[in-house]
Image (cartoon, rainbow, N blue to C red; front, side, top):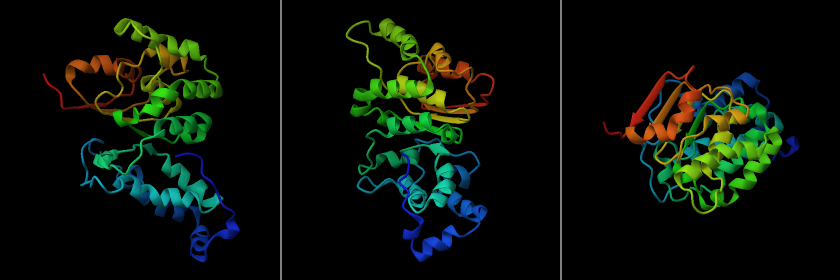
Length: 264
């Protein structure tokens, strides 16, 4: 979901030119049918539960559904201005069992999205749903987390050393050996701090790996999160370690905590 390359309007086909000539409201209504958030406003199933059959050797069904929105962003500046806000209603790669696709690449998905919403606060304000799966914990993310955090912190005026200190403290308490390196937990915290209107969060096992420190979020400029629903796949006895900071920061708005695959 990086910034779109917009060709000149004069290169459109007659069919696309006809679509571009429609009123904004009509185009928005058409394109919103390709967004799960717009098309299915009622409660959706847990993001990691298969919504439909995903063939392993076929492209991700969820990515295919989004393709018209991506394509619209490449047609013209006008269509991009209409399609892009719809596209950024959610960041849920791998949704509904589509993560099973072997054709889907997870490389730099999280870092690219984080960079975009950090630089484009108008797009960040549109994001309502976020799906964080351990598949986003790719090797390139582990290697480039520090540089991504440095770039985002600079863009948002955050002191990176102060932001990382609470995470370092958690690492020192739990590991205490080797060398501390920022990872996806720090990227997750920074991402949450960029999304002021996020209302629903989906989490799979091992995502986040540890609890997000409240002090880290506050250093990033967050006084509270606006989450209303958290869907988490995991076991009851590990939720405090994983969700502590997120739950505390969402205390004033949280209405639903859906836990799947837990033991009493």
